[in-house]
Image (cartoon, rainbow, N blue to C red):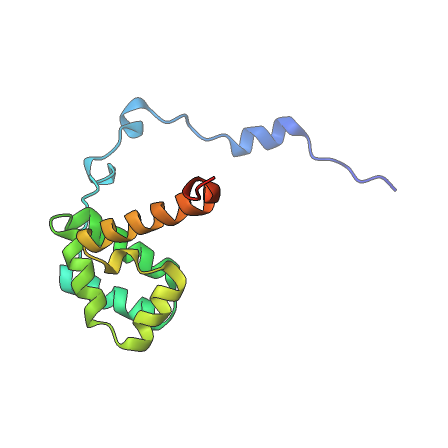
Length: 135
């Protein structure tokens, strides 16, 4: 009960197609890939609204993505833009942000310096507690 296999020579003869010429292999100009153009960045206000929406939704990855876009496209006065943005947040959203990221970016430069000095001083006192005592 063996099946007869078709004769390969017959199969090849009926299925042969002519080889394409070099002319037919040339790429038509309409088929060439088009140059990719970058999409324009979102306006600053839209990015800030999206950041606020991400904080409200507690979507920290989304917030960081929009923050990165803001820093990349609108780097001038970035720190003050962020501080003003944080001031505009509702109190519960600002509290959630601070609980997750801390409040470092909400501070001005002078406030950051003061806090850094206080932190360094407290580290020194914890590290060398016996240096300040008289023996």
